[in-house]
Structure formats: C-alpha cells, structure tokens
Length: 159
Image 1 (spheres, rainbow, N blue to C red):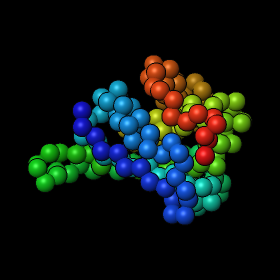
Image 2: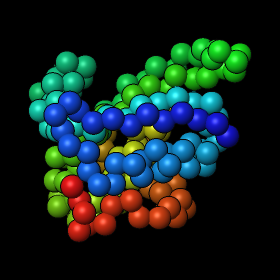
Image 3: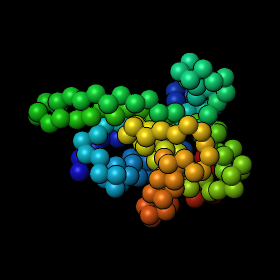
C-alpha cells in the first residue's frame, strides 16, 4: 500500500523527541485499515491553537485533544495515480498530557489513541458523544488492542 503522511508542528512549538515516529506509525495504521493512496497531515500544537480551531469550526469555546478536518477529494499526481486527500488531524500536546493524568493511561497509549481516532474520523466514522459504547469508539479500542505497535513515547521522554 502506498500512502503519504505529513507531520508538522505549530509554529514556535518545539518538536518532541518522538516526532519522527509518527509517520511510520500512521502508515501502519492506514495499511491495517486497508486504506490505500491516502494523503493526510498531522499538526501537533498547544491548547491555545486548538482552542481557537474548536471555537471557529465547532463553536465550542474550549481546547480539545484532537480535531479532524475531513477533505476526501481525489486527485491525480504527475504519474496519473489517483490519491485521496483525506484531510488533516490536529492534536494538542497539552491536552494529550492532561488526558494521561485524567484517564490514567501512558502518553504512548494516549498518543496512539488520538492518532487512530483522527484517522477514523477522516475515514467517515463518527460518534455522538464520548461514551465508550459508541460504535466508533468500540472499533477504535479493539483496533488499538490488535495493532501491537512498538512504543512511540517512553514516559521519560514525554516532551
């Protein structure tokens, strides 16, 4: 399978030590979900940045952990291959950290959860609330259990 993943940081925000491990992780996620010729981007940011996006696009005046902006347009590259411009995922490093404390999970598990959550939204899945019995969230947790991917973040290198 062939996919393009672009990972970036909010301007002025330093890249964490695990930054380079995001693209390979997402390529495995896309492959396991049998998504081919997908192009997506991930932006890591701070709470103030995602707060503004959440206010602007969802009319919610609070920061959040992850936002997905689905595109879904198809295009052909220079060689005539068709691609899906799936969209963009934005993840707040601040809220990721506070989620770890609130839910009692490791930074590695929460990062993987947020990335998979974003991809599932780009693939058209949705949930009406955050209750764990929501179909998308059940799928997400089952997928993560089966994924068995090496650690991206050791808690000693959280940032």
